[in-house]
Image (cartoon, rainbow, N blue to C red; front, side):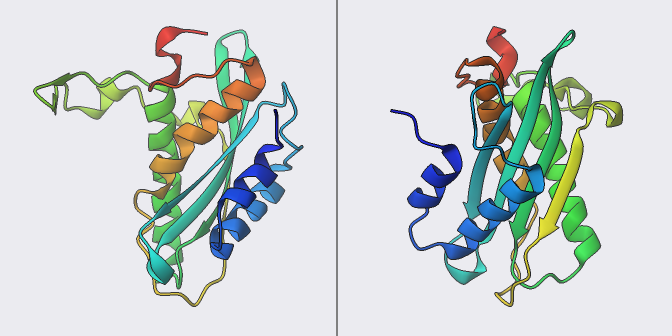
Length: 184
């Protein structure tokens, strides 16, 4: 039983109209095609916190298979963080989080010893370089809700959106991070 991913998620959001608005806007920004097989598009939503002060984001990732493997070509995100105090810093936080989320999804595994990372330098994480970063379309939804912290939103939403995009592109459901650790 397959359901169109956008309408499925909207039905699951309950009464969170702000998150539904994020999801609909992210789909518009990405040119959502209905999530058909082989489209290479996947979406995800996240809310950090509860109530009117919660931060909300929706992201549509687009991935393509090519000679060098799988590549994320676009991330479209719609964000609701309430009243924005500093628009430039909020955008930088979302962009940085999305790039970090790409690293979580497609970078190197983090090995732990007694619950502590063995390697503590960023280079070992396999974060994407500027040349490897996809096109990013980010839009903030106007809101008079209390300001919310945008800091972790991109890092939280990018990996599941990328996983769903890879599923659409390849037909394989990858459930461990980093996603390509077991190969395709």
